[in-house]
Image 1 (cartoon, rainbow, N blue to C red):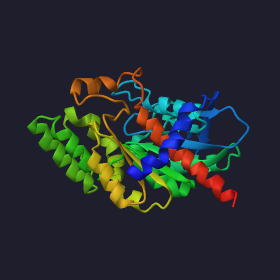
Image 2 (spheres, rainbow, N blue to C red; image 1 turned 90 degrees about the vertical axis):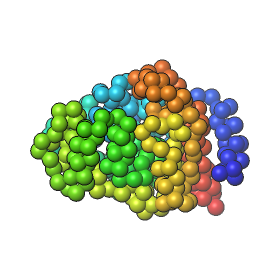
Image 3 (cartoon, rainbow, N blue to C red; image 1 turned 90 degrees about the horizontal axis):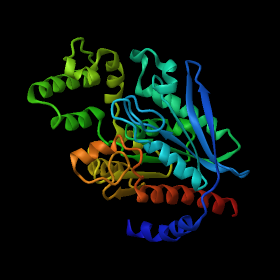
Image 4 (cartoon, rainbow, N blue to C red; image 1 turned 135 degrees about the vertical axis):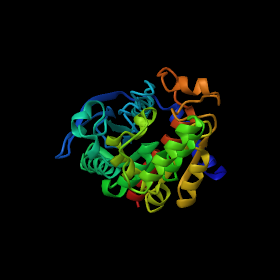
Length: 326
């Protein structure tokens, strides 16, 4: 880790001195053949090919900007895309099927699966790979989006992968951990039974009303598809350059998950950002302040997050240029 930091310091200094670039923003659509997905393209104003990041949002009704109808507006992924564009890196972020502007592509929630989301991400990547405006393709997945990115990376033709706050464990285990401190004992026992049934591939017809937001019958096929995935194994099978980013103050995913992903891919870079939470902000380990950050778009992104991502992507570009000059 120290060696990586020393190598990155000159690059970070150059980035800090570089003047922000002019940015173009355009709507972008992908016709999948079974629905149109809608997103936003941000790119620096230049005639030269630039790297492009496909940004994949997390679980639930989280839109392209990182905002969730249940949690509030925080604009985490929008801010990340803007940061990239100011430093010469294009991005596409999109609403997944059934969410926000792509709602019409997933009107029947029972037909959604993690595999379908991964196929959509791969299709976006394939489109961007064919676009002459772009050079390298980097998939950036946040939270559950990190698993989708890992599943899609090879089919997308990605040149690199960045996992931010991604779980290494099957997601039912992560949910169990999250619910331990959030549910009273009777509901916790019922949630355990539901998770065990869904992990076994069995749907449950009767769900207690307080748990319907998580386990309603219409979302259970998706959860079954999600729970059968082994994120560390999926990540470990990839051969492209990878960066794992995890905040030390994340109340949803822990540092242990990032370390397990690193163990699955020893050659991947690992960045543990002190004080960063799940919304990519520096927030104390105080529950009130943590929850407030989920609905505060004015909070700046953690500075080290941008530094790490920019250094990683620009390092890929430098390697490509070095190879082409030989």
